[in-house]
Length: 232
Image 1 (cartoon, rainbow, N blue to C red):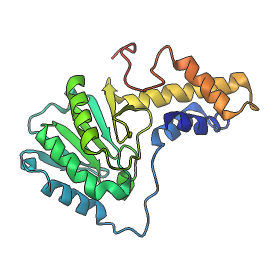
Image 2 (tube, rainbow, N blue to C red):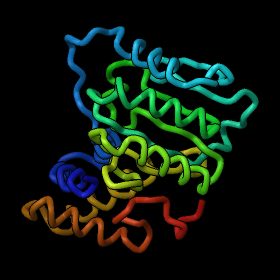
Image 3 (cartoon, helix red, strand yellow):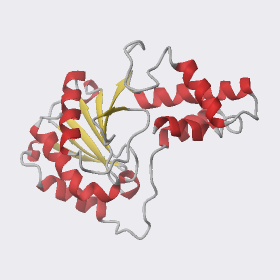
Image 4 (spheres, rainbow, N blue to C red):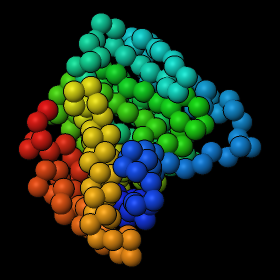
């Protein structure tokens, strides 16, 4: 999935700058919300999910313009840098979101967030759980991949797939920045350089392959998991 995204964005290299390429890469994987959809739908989904998660009352609830959040009181949120992404397709959310909430509460996940409106729920990274260590994040990701195995995946590009379907994947924050943002910026810069080097007539797939080859010594361009070779 991620390579397909890189090839598509490579077609823009040379026509827009690296910052624009990085923005397109980061937003990739999303779908368009149906304008006819009831605007109360996201609120109903969250209510349904909360009713399916006994013990959720011990979490603090927050709301911003774009995100609904649940956090254990007193937890240091800046230390929760290991991410688990959950990305079912929007039609699966009424059945999948309650399972995510129940699993998060049962496994004492310190913090998670869900897109607060229809646009947020159509993002690829619509559900993000935050944990303090890689082993805990891996355990939560494996549990979610198991319980959500039968649902259709939308998938989050530039994250490390967990399980067979891509509905669950792993990421990380580094120096208060999303690992996905780091990767998108690196890929965008290399696409820009390779297009300039190879010329305007080279096909996008060749530009993409050259860019990924150039990045392979520094980043894991196969699994896209946070690479220990890159300083935290």
